[in-house]
Length: 165
Image (tube, rainbow, N blue to C red; front, side, top):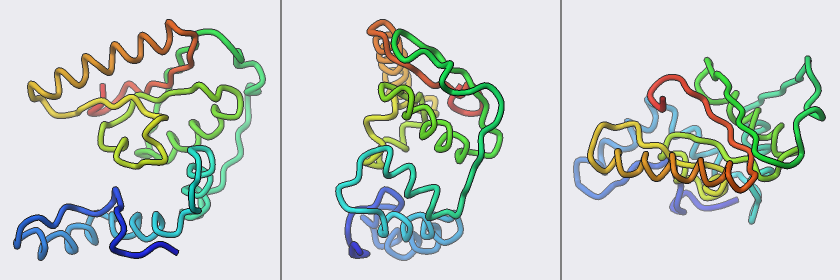
């Protein structure tokens, strides 16, 4: 098991006296504390697919997909997948895991903060949900990166709802 002082993308910065006091409270209220504990129990040196599997397992999430078989997804060439995720995010983890089996080149447009998770950094093209000049630059880069990924024959998963859209 990793130590509690190890870097975790689910811990808030404790750079001020106020945050040293507030961060643990905010982490408890928002569920970040629970996610941090799951993160500490991840396998060592895990790749993206194994981390997605660990995430679902540690949260006790099991899924069964029905309908059109994933084998019909083209194995090569540009592919744009547009989906919804009404539950907040777990469907994105499930869909990314499923798609990685058929398209290891899959990338997902997602909230920039998710790129803080090292095991998922290469999976995501980060979009900044705030309305700042920096966000506009970040989002222009994200659009360029997404277009480049598709132009080079990659698969892209987009969830065009909520703040990210």
